[in-house]
Image 1 (cartoon, rainbow, N blue to C red):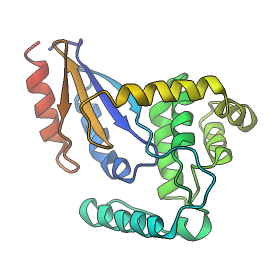
Image 2: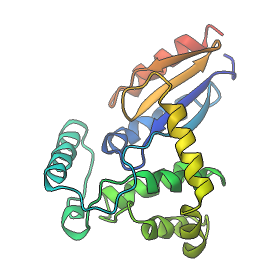
Image 3: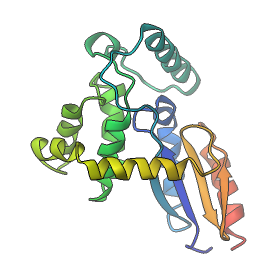
Image 4: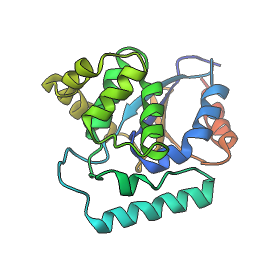
Length: 208
C-alpha cells in the first residue's frame, strides 16, 4: 500500500460524540499505522463566549451524554453540571489543541481535555484549566500557556483552520476525510465497529 494517502480526523475537543468515538478511534489509528498518514484538524463547535450556558442547552447536552452513555457505554461525570459554570464556548479548547500540535502533543492534549471535561468535572472553556492541562503534559508552564492562548496569531490560525475544514465533505464532528488519488473521500464512522471504517479506507488506499 502507498503511504501517500492521508487520513484527517476532524474533531472538537469538547464534542461529546468525539469522546464517545475515542475508543474506536484509538483502535482504528493503531490498525492504520503504516498504511496512511494521520493528521488532526479542529472544527470549532462554539465561538468564544463568557455568557453562562442557557438552561435548555444544559439539559439538551446532558441528554446527549445519557444517549451516548447508553449507546456506547461511554463514561460521563455529571458532577460537571453542578460544580462548574457551563459556557457554550469550545474555541479556547481548540486553540489549546493547536498549541499542543506545535510540539507534537495534539492527541495527548485532546485526551487530557476530554478527561478533564467528561471524567474530572473541570471546565475546558476556561483558559486556566487548559493551562493546567498543558503544564501537566509538560508543554509549557501555566503562565506561558495561558498567555499563548490569547495570541492574535493563534486566533488567526484557528479561524483559518476552521474555514478550511468547512470546505471538506463533513457533517459535524467527529468526521474522517481521506485524501488519496488526488481526491477527497468522506469516510463513514462506525462508533462501535472500527473494522468497518478500516475496510473502507483500506479498499480506497489499496488502489493507489
